[in-house]
Amino acid sequence: MAYDPLQPRFTDNTLINPTAGWLVADASLSANILYSIPYLSPGAIEIDGCTINRTGAGSGNITTAIYKYNRVLDQYELVTNTDINTWNASATGFQTISITDTIMNSGIYLLTILADVTLSGKNSGYTTQFPYTPLGLDATGVSYQSLTKTYTYTATMPATLAADSSFWTFNNSYYGKYASFLLNQS
Image (cartoon, rainbow, N blue to C red; front, side, top):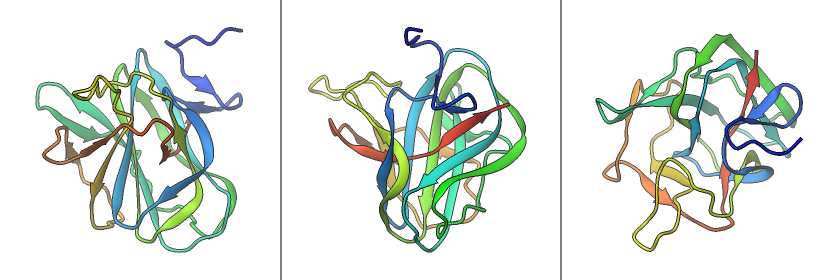
């Protein structure tokens, strides 16, 4: 079957990579940095969990959340049920945390991850080669791939995040690897 850019890509029959990037297992997390991967969902996706892949044991704490862009207020708002802070950073392999069934309707989303210690090259994430994302292009016409923000670790993610460059640093590294997670389809 040909890849349909309007449908999420499946890593297997359950795990969804909703982004324009490709799943990698060696992305790094730096302590106290919010990493966010944007994606456009053209239709509703129902999820009942999130999954990370750890290729090496670490320590510390990891928190993840999904945010949806609110065009009226020009901010990202936490999607109910998606703030997860029970990840085991010392475990290796695929790790799934179940959540209450959640419908993510069409819109622009951020997959956001935050750790309190640096976890180098041991995390699931996405790599890209200049796909177009909902973030648009920089002044030279290069597509932005991810957003980062220095942010003191907290086990509970904030209810809203700003949407502009006064808050975020926009990244456009051609072969960048950006830490993130997968969605579990209900």
